[in-house]
Amino acid sequence: MSERFNDWKYPDIEEGKPTKYNWVVQHVNNIKIGFKIDIGAFCYLNAKYGITIEDEVQIGSHCSIYSVSTIDNKEGPVVLKRNSKIGSHSTVMPGITIGENSIIGAHSLVSCDIPDNVIAFGVPARIVKSIDGKDIK
Image (cartoon, rainbow, N blue to C red; front, side, top):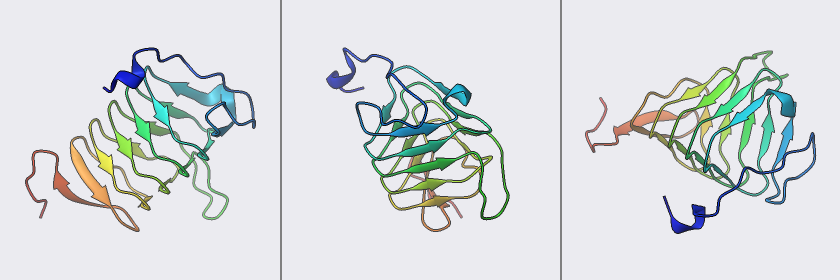
């Protein structure tokens, strides 16, 4: 991890109020965050049915993470596993798990689980490559 995390501290999170980093959580009692996470400005996290963000996860700016959707009536906990990364302007839908070390490209819509150690992007997000560089067929 970068030196910028040397003095990392857990953020103060209040219901529906921007953190000092300008991201907002609804249902703050249902979010679990790990150590040395990085959530970009203007992100929205709806944790009604739970959001777990494990250690060293990075979320780009302007992302939305939903544990409930009023559009299609889906609900379920979202899990972002250790060292996963989500590119800016992406959306993660209810009930989704993004695997350890996986990378989601910017402007993606994640509507299905993403396994460990892959790169995925698009609308909807599709796995395009494993982290070791092998193409996924």
